[in-house]
Length: 330
Image (tube, rainbow, N blue to C red; front, side, top):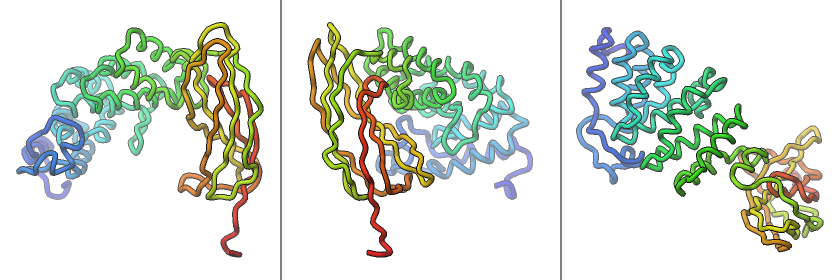
């Protein structure tokens, strides 16, 4: 494209925009699935990506025209990556343009605002200014939190999850504020936005979602099998009792502290149950957790610790011995 499009950026941008297919207005499937949106004249779907990248590379000296071009491109796939150099190099001007799109009728334009401004967008350039201070984008997220499209609301949740990695207390405060008189759709995105903090047992977030400190007792963790072969499962059980005079909501998770090559352990938290216990009510819980080879984790033989957490606090723990067969000797 750089070799064959006109040297004048405005001429190149005109050619790019004029080459596009008609814009749908739905979720991403409307763009990528021919059965959802039969192919017509022009370019859409993955073919948009090099076009958007071209705009990002060659349009930095013409922000207005570049953003207008990305406005058209994102409606045919996405410009969430291409918009980020403009946010870095022309922050105030780009944010002002995005603010003017916040109520756009096209769902892909609205999603560009929440997704393109994510501080830590996977596979995208990190936006250090928003990592340090997300204030400029929180207003966008607040406006879009009840968007009529789940596609947009889900993006809002993912952006908040990004922010939570650097500003956990702030996201807990946002969650508490947003939950006031919140419809179910907003409650869902808040839970999704806070997923990392909930796994970490972040106290303010747990409290914001109604899972504050609670007085419970737990039995010893019973390990059904204390020796586990890689590829098998570890099974454990316990009983938990609410010792308070009122009913309480409990979020029960468990962490497995996997052994590392140097003998130390690193924890991975797994979601388990949400339940409500009445005064003095007791519940018996059991779990079978598969220990199988996956691409994102390397297992090492030896003792692995399990911790049971209620509303972020450890109430019981146990161990199992992971054995790994040497396939070279099998």
